[in-house]
Image (cartoon, rainbow, N blue to C red; front, side, top):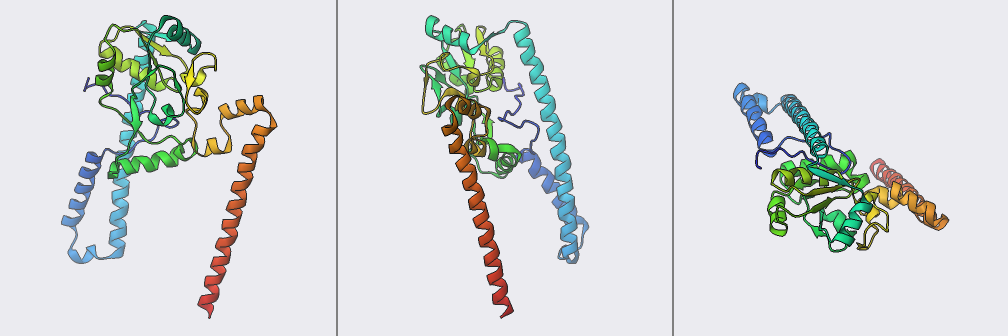
Length: 296
């Protein structure tokens, strides 16, 4: 299983990746050694030289970053082919959320919830087993911080989804809970990570796998017995988009609940504009005050 390359899966962006820490360290070490050995000490102190050296390092890093991005895109394409083959060959059976709900309630089949904790803590299916395949990365090394910044810039601020990393203990945790011959229904929020989990479980010897197409987000209220502070449909939203009510789930809820629901988020949007305007005016006044002090 160590040889299986699992692509990194984030909620909204899978097209941007950064160099691994070890590769980045080796590359920077080579660039630094080349620059140190080829230039006299006096030149190293020159600001122009330092700027040129910095630009060369950035170019080298960007080139490596693009190569790694292409590799991840190829891995993702290969994974999609494997997943399509699993379904086409019948190794993984498709269930709609309603069919999965019937199987759980009437046949007592287990549901494996592979969502990260940020989604699980908002809502879950009653009696489901939670073993996340990806979880929020709490490390703060240089490589992880870079990934977190990239994830935030590329949409994390809007969606609220943190940077996720594959849990290497996922398979062992599943094997502790379920035998290889178990009828296992696998679900996530939108259906992508659960399909990746089915791929891993099939390679590990599980032969009775059922995938919830569209994930829990596609379920209606009557499909599952849900628990938690929010509806299952809302478990995958967050960030600024949730705060402003600009998600498909919230729009659908607004259409059902009427103007009161819409006015709440409209008031939040107006509040943001008022705060931004006040901050802008305050910054202008501070700038004028500093100029007056300098002029005197």
